[in-house]
Structure formats: structure tokens, C-alpha cells
Image 1 (cartoon, rainbow, N blue to C red):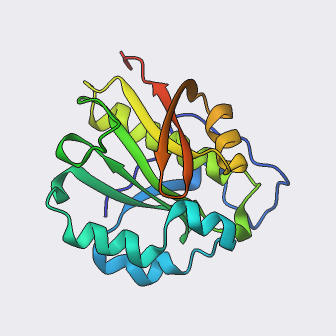
Image 2: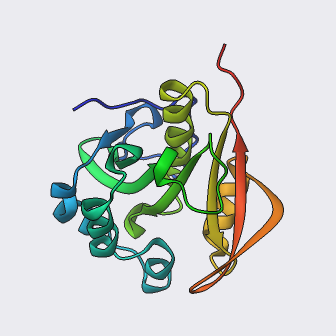
Length: 185
């Protein structure tokens, strides 16, 4: 399977010989058959409500009428999946996203490695993937629940901008965040 390296190096806290270096964190495309491996990514219950259950996410991927516009990835450190997210485009975009952008969904980093820089590395990888594979796309967007303060902090530190747009979702208000992707050239 093809994988993509980090575009820029991410800083990891608490260096350890056992922890992979930032350049060793890659994306690997996953399919609906990868459900079991992704289910091993354990989140705290309060985080699970925001990311969605793995079964619900994979059922949605399996039943999607726009499968070619949904790109599911495992975030892999060394040889272990430590995270997961989906990028959506074109017909798979949510109603709040304008045409011509890519959106980030179902982002999760296993609780065992949270706070070590892997979330930031995963966000950087998502941005890198868009930059490398969709050069005409100028923006990555996401919706983050207002109560999900750790995720909001991560996205803002990674360079996403909260321009004040709110979406009233089934489990509360969500902030629409944007990350402008400048031309790589």
C-alpha cells in the first residue's frame, strides 16, 4: 500500500527510543475491511461521541454512494496504527462545505499516544495529502464540537482558523474551521 510522509516535521514530547520519529509517521489508505484494526484505537467515552463509533463510520463508508470521494486513512507510527481519519471531497462533502474544498472527518488518535504529538502529525499528514493529491484545492475544512476542547486546541495550534461559523449538530454546536492551503509551488 502507498503511504505518505509528513510534509514538515512535527515535534514530539517525551522523546523515547521506542517511539517512532516524526518522519516515520505515515498515512496508509484503509478499506472497509480494515474495521477490526481501526477498532483497536481506543478513545475515552467522551471523545468517542465526537469521533463517532468505528462501526458507524465504517458502515457509512461501506454504504456510501460517493465512495470515490471518501478517502479513509490509518495514521501509522512504526508498524502500528495509532490514528484514523477520513477526507471527503466532491459529492461526499457535507452540506456546510462549499464545492472545491476537502473536509476532515472522524479524526481519532488512540488514547495511549495522545499528548505526544501524533495528533498534530496526523493533521499535518492530512494537509500534506491534500496539497500533494489535490493541488487545485485551496482549503481543508472541518467541524469540531464546541465541547471538544482538546480537539479544538489541536486544530487551532495546527493553523486552522475559526471564523465564527457555527453548525447546530445532533450532539451540540460545532465550529467550522478552515485551513488555507497555499500553492506548494
